[in-house]
Image (cartoon, rainbow, N blue to C red):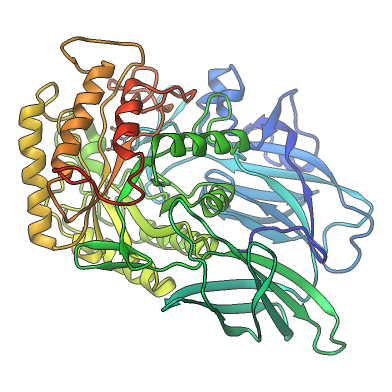
Length: 600
Ligand code: BDP
């Protein structure tokens, strides 16, 4: 789905700001038909939970309602008027005045509705949006809702980050021409010193197409025409990690009857290639070593709300610490994040919202015989269909971002359980069909190892999440190191693919120091990382290290969580713990090269 764009033929009316807000009430079954009851207001974009002080709102399970009036600009008489939601977490229902317009399932991808026939230029309409945060056996991520005897409903989910919900990304009203670009796919390759840009377009009707590719100095470097075209850029500037170079593809849609311009849409193009060959990950044909983090969209008060200032600041910190990449754990991030990564040469592993696919670990200590994760009653065909739809929407949204080099299909599924292969094989097939250019990965949890794993060969890169020295062998880094080495060696031996540490980390309370480097102290986090790095550097098949996590983040209540997950290298307000300096010393100046045990 194309990102909204304002320009000669397209306009955007941004609908962010303060909206009316109400929880769903059993005695008001049609809240969209009138002004919402009560006196609550809410900010958009932001998760609603932490904006309020009332725990009944913060922990509400079910629908909430957002409402505002929208003035349709008077000049918008021709063309189409489209309501666009960058996301509604996890399900959205949209009403224009009294009319139901449509719904969308999945909390982290955009959706839009053509409302031309429902609204009037120069007039205002009442826009009401229902947003549901329920996670069930059939949603992705999954969860379970308990109906308690006293009438309350309790949401359980199988991941630790807090189930923030609401309209956490922008809402807008778009004005687009009737005849326009509906979709574009750009694939790049390199031939000697030339860049090759393959363009495939869809338009809303038959049209003549003019394509112009410009460099960063605005000079035209290639031109073409038609809905499929190959543009060649002699002596191309490649898009590289840490040195982004973006060309701009301008697509002009011409009315075939009169030849006048109907639509203009531009796409940033980074010329680069990605390939897994043997045990190497190649970027532009050269081995690339990933340094960075698993992140979260998570800040105080805003929750998962997109915030441009945090975006800029987080990328500043990535640069400061020498990180060249991050994973959008555990869901697709706001599109602004990917645009920024494109511009600043930060590599992205783009993940679906499939997290918590592991009912064994979810059962925790209280559940002796956890149910099988993959079965018709638990995560079955219905979940798989939802997962496939999320994957389609993710790839449709992000396929043109040069920063995105790999799709991560799921985080820590029960890959060792029966049924995992039947569940994942159709999804990896689908991802390869939708995007034959990018490698695939997933992350294996601690109990899925090279001996019992049933799915790793479906993927190109073996992603592992390991907590030796934390959940296993706490405070015993010697035993932890032995287990880590054995684990990595077994993956390499069995799969002969690149191995990537997608998560390793230790909870650390900023300001807690211990001369004996006891767990939770800043010293322990440093020693834990040093041990891991010593190990990583011994294996040439090892292609990346992503520390868990970039910053401390909010979680649901949990015995292992003191005020949230504290594995951040930065605190939640982005101040460095001591380990930030450890990483900075290791990563600075690497520029994608792998450190080795005898020095870089
Ligand atoms: C891993 C999960 C991640 C958690 C982390 C932890 O992938 O989402 O936050 O463990 O326990 O299992 O800190």
